[in-house]
Length: 218
Ligand SMILES: N[C@@H](CCC(=O)N[C@@H](CS)C(=O)NCC(=O)O)C(=O)O
Image (tube, rainbow, N blue to C red; front, side):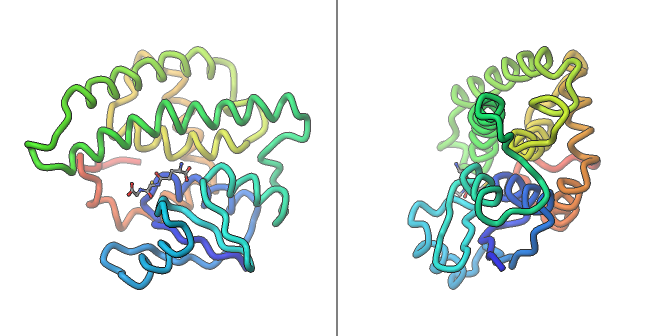
């Protein structure tokens, strides 16, 4: 059984946990709890850049959420084809995965990490730029999602695994306004997807960790 070194409240960990549930794969959860020095040291030996999650399968260590999800498909199998077998369709899935990581999750992380800093260390310009990028991403996604169920059409994919925690936390960080109805509806569909709903439920006890204050919903 593979081991996932992760934290339930982390967005990139939820992305991979959603994929594991889609595949119906059992795994051992090695929680990277704050203050657990032993887990942290073990994690640093596995992946010196220390970005969660990391999957260990036998003597293989796999880092980076998208690569872990690709690995689940090609090595560990399971019923969920999260990457289409058609190579051109697969490009669209990988493109949307990059969109959610780079243009939704990255600005969300910037704003959230900024909120954890002392007043003197804050970067208001960076926060403004990140909020503007989120607005641009929401507008682009609203057009893209009109008439679609999932990010790349009818099949739930890697891109939706990336979208789920990205849009979940994005709405908490920089609200997805009424002018983006297709993005809001997509976020609701993602929250209703059993694989992601399970990841969200497992993270409920940690909501007080959210530096901007978790809203009383979802
Ligand atoms: N590109 C990485 C990003 C992973 C990442 O940023 N993980 C966050 C948690 S959501 C993390 O480990 N942050 C620790 C830090 O920034 O020191 C991936 O896709 O796995």
